[in-house]
Image (cartoon, rainbow, N blue to C red):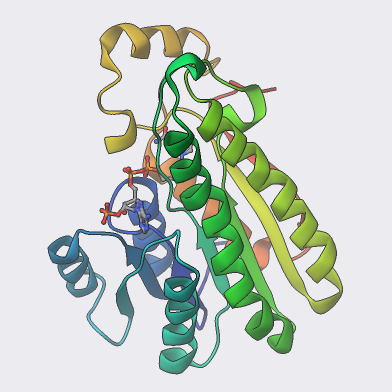
Length: 248
Ligand code: NDP
């Protein structure tokens, strides 16, 4: 079965770069109409809309993932433009890495606000329209770090572990309404977020990965497309590890 998203309207948070962008491009190539949010890269967002086929097929929305109002406006923009919201990918995320001894309350709060409370805001905004449609697929982007923990990432790991409990709860709440909720848990993926790790850390990382390489954004996009598509209509509450075997 090839993954076909024709006729589906999908919102991806944090879609201008890295993993989010790969998901946006793959969903567009699979036939979906795709809206995506971004924080600051307006020029990139506008170029991406054109690359996706223009305004009929794509919608760029400047929205801070940590804002409840922005989340509600983004979901509303999708339903106003295309009528339904069939897929939601909660991808926007940030890091503020440092050891606990140096981690400020602000470092903690900023990461939790964007990565976890942001997921609450946007999923809450999509909850009602999906429930009414009696159909929909929510995919949250967690991390191998949310499963295994990582020194220097207590805030990030807590936010990503929280996403797993959150998403499983949504799956239980919404299953009866035909709405599914699943998690993709990437390992170390080559994006701007991991660009500054340096050769030493990267080599050490590879040593922990049975497949022996870092992942690419397209690896995550492929797994996400599966969960958005009708190929996975009997899959909910699942954590799909896409990490070369790091966490098993
Ligand atoms: P990048 O830093 O490469 O891209 C982040 C994207 O999110 C950009 O489009 C950015 O927009 C957007 N964004 C950031 N903050 C906000 C915000 N407050 N509101 C709206 N949009 C925002 O990240 P990755 O692609 O590497 O990561 C994507 C997701 O995958 C994250 O949730 C991350 O935690 C997770 N992940 C990544 C891994 C990796 O190894 N890279 C591993 C495991 C999980 P703008 O361009 O405007 O800044």
